[in-house]
Length: 189
Ligand code: 2AM
Image (cartoon, rainbow, N blue to C red):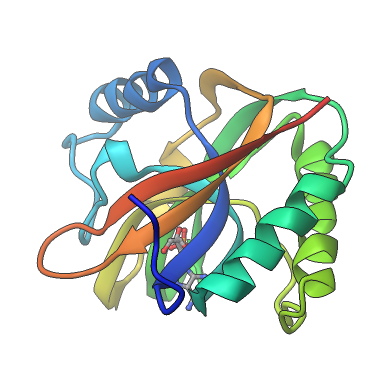
């Protein structure tokens, strides 16, 4: 169905996970965690991803310019990404976000985020002010909690994600978990 010119979408660009990694990670967490529970509210595994750039709402014209810029840039060579232990934003003693960090391949992921950022700015969006901090959000915690013990207990996760494309997602918010719809993908070399 054709989209009308005044369509507005809430967009982010991310590294998606293969189902094998997604559900392998969910299984690993449920056995590795002391009481099989994460504090706070956890997005369902189907929503797990690593955000490269969150853009927010944009109209059809901006969306099409973004796609054309993403299509025109060099995204680099595909690479393998491994996962490290847990971390927290803004800090472990008062965590509002519990996340899984990346291990091997983090430098390549940094480069990929840099390429995406260049395309985004070239498309006319404001530059991201915050430094890129790759993470996979596992839980959002309100009110904040001390998760220091949990972070120390979680070692490297034995899973590898082959990063061979990036995905442009539309985010639908509402009651319950967000729904993330993949709209476009761009392949690495
Ligand atoms: P998060 O992983 O740190 O929660 C889709 O909403 C993705 O975009 C989420 O993974 C979230 O990152 C990120 N995101 C959502 N709102 C954002 C915002 N206002 N600024 C930056 N990133 C945001």
